[in-house]
Length: 328
Image: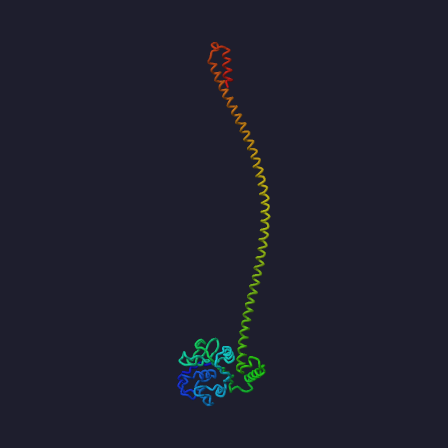
């Protein structure tokens, strides 16, 4: 769909319909129709004039089919319905939407909704956001398939078109695809084909991801089995260490018993040693006393040697010896 502006110099100065207004200032609707019919605003203006498709500068909607055979007028509404507009965009690729025109200096303005929250604005001739203008109404205009006159009647293209027409005619009346026209049906098939291609693409991506996950899962299982073997081995080591610890505990208990027995015996021997030490001390005291007596006796004998027996009375001498020996 070619982007067109109503203010293009090639047609902007042409008078609109049966009025004194120019296409540049009031030709937003015919510019939108021109983009949908793959022509130009001046041609649309001329075709509508030829079939009485104007009341002043206002279009007679029902004359669109007669003036532009490729288009099919379906509905004009004076309040906005997002669901209906979205369905028209899905079926025909675009939908005329009436918006508040204060932003460009007018009361009303018409733009083409093309989906994905985008519009074609004939005032500027470019693509903008749907938030550019508040929507207040719409007109559903169908677009018929454009068939080249150069295609022979018995060509593959004509036969394919015949098959599509027959399939469209055989659709049940309550089928959503039957609500539009043949072009909408073809667009829907094209969309479904695109969706199918995308689904197949996503399916292959998912298969690849599943394959990668299976490979990862296999690797994880192998790692888990190896970890399990390691864990089992470690479990055996722990059990063996536990048995060793139990043996060490038994040995430690025996050692403690022996230690307690040795401590008891040591205390007994210490008591005996203390007793012997006391006896030794008593013996030493006796020895010391004996040594003292011997020393006294030796001194006495020494003194006696110095005394002349003639000078000493024998009885006194004996008394002195006994006295010295037993004075204690």
